[in-house]
Amino acid sequence: MPQEKSPKKFFMTGGTGLIGLNLIPRLLHSSPNSTVTLLVRGNDEAEAAARTRRIAESLQRQWTIPGLPGRLLCIRGDVTLDDFGIERDVRERLMRETTHFIHGAATIRFDHPIGEARFINCRGTERALALAEQGLRDGPLQRFVYIGTSSVSGKRGGDIFEDELEMGQSFFNTYEQSKAESERLVRNSMSRIPTVIFRPSIVIGDSRTGWTPTFNVIYIPLRLFDRGMLAVLPASPDVTLDLVPVDWVTDVMVWIMGLAASEGKVCHITAGKHRSARLRDVIERAGRYFDACHPLPKPRTLEFVSPEEFGRRRAAVHGSERTLLDQLDTLLPYISVDRLFDSRTTDGLLRESAITFPRFSDYADAIFGYCVKTRWGKTEG
Image 1 (cartoon, rainbow, N blue to C red):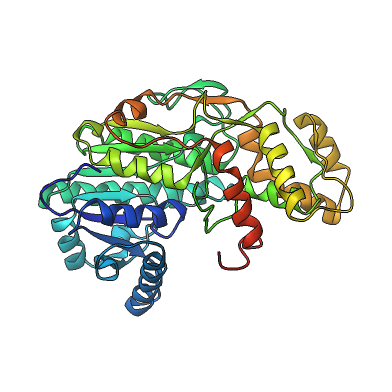
Image 2 (image 1 turned 90 degrees about the horizontal axis):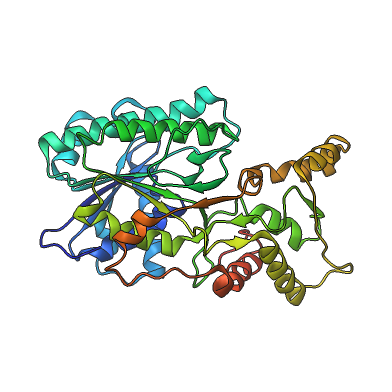
């Protein structure tokens, strides 16, 4: 983020997720006197404070940031509650000080009934926008940052542009639908609230270390493939995976949210047409790595079939074999349609930065290595 004279006061929801945990140290590093206040759930203030201390201690082991523990603050609350469940005097003090409001809290479950997904994602966004308006009236709010998703494109294929939202698309799941509806709420408030919308794609671990606290989406089939349990995928081997490492994603977000020119923009944080990885290449690279670490008695093989054929095979099996195939459901939206995300707005805002995109082929082994070293998240990295 470009340096400014006055210290920044960040308020963040969703700070305990993959993106949030990577944003915190970068935000603190962006300004020597900045603070980050997290909205943290807890049965009481002591529990919320203890969760925040654990986050600070973990980040301090990874980063050299002066005074980090004292600069990471918390307010107990929940996005599913009116006013986030924050008491009036605390809320008023918070919004008198906040310069940047980052709303990243959301349910990422694909299987919520649409009413539950809307209750968390859409209502949570409505509450965040109401607080942001209070910050504009009473405080120094410079930017409302909404962390959305490129999955608002739903089942659309082909070129997807940043200015597009409602294009008559249908959705793979209620997560996509509720996030699209949430983004519409944010867009409708842009004439009143200085906003930037970020749409990251498939966010994976750190490109240097492989670190990730979550092993979802692409990690699920990779884990099965590592164990020799994945024999079929319902996709073309040439479909593109828009993979983005979390360190690059958060570097981009911090830089862009600090630019005056970001106001009113929708930014794809994506690999795009020329930097996405082919599914075949990801699988072949993973197979070579896993074979070198621990070869199996039988070679790892994977058959690519049509979604229709996959559906027939899944319907024909039961028990543990059916459960195994069901685990692929979180990946299906990303490999069922070949989509290419245009990022010209993001690219233009990054022109004066030194941020470069790391290609998957250059850091793939770091991702696979972290998975193997931590036994897919069962041990510390």
